[in-house]
Length: 233
Image 1 (cartoon, rainbow, N blue to C red):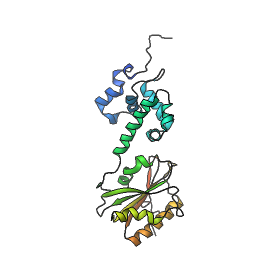
Image 2 (image 1 turned 90 degrees about the horizontal axis):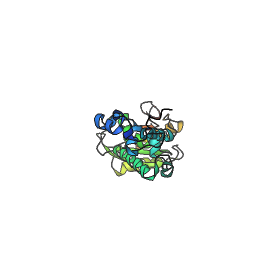
Image 3 (image 1 turned 180 degrees about the vertical axis):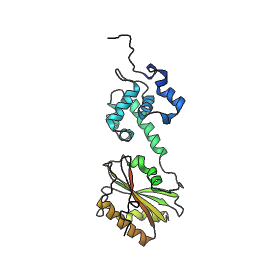
Image 4 (image 1 turned 45 degrees about the vertical axis):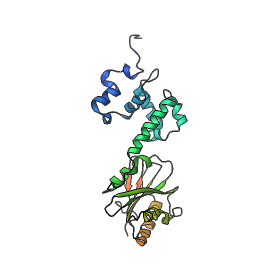
């Protein structure tokens, strides 16, 4: 055994060009992996693992940053190399990132991708189905986003009138309906299609244009209008 090999437990034990802080200063935060960004928060590793390896272990344990964001605080504290103080820092940092993605009023939606971008980060990690509406003015500027239902999205459970209440209260002439699939697969179900048809019919009666119904999955989304699901015929 070579006793001259120094164990690498701290960021400062890494070669300078491999240290996350130095890489961030030189290349910018976008150049770092999620594990490296976590390592900056962790600051130190544990015997047998440096901080980057601990960060990667956390990502492997909880799936990804979204899984880490939704991890129970107590469970995160119990992970080797974390503890309460570091768990607090990690969750606070992820929450700050999430808040950066929250919609800003007057943002213009010109495509399904732009609509998905407003909610993808948060909704892809939800453990139940949530139905929300993006309210738009006549120039497709975002007036706000409202949650109108939580539970199984099907025609027997969703009260269609509730979908339009926020738009009526804001005098919004158009909406985009959006809900998530906790399974991570955004493929629309027959119930999704049935709900879409009911929403479209109600929108015509209320003179509110339903521009799309989108399904959010894990890292993917589907525009039901683009696929002609519930919007045709």
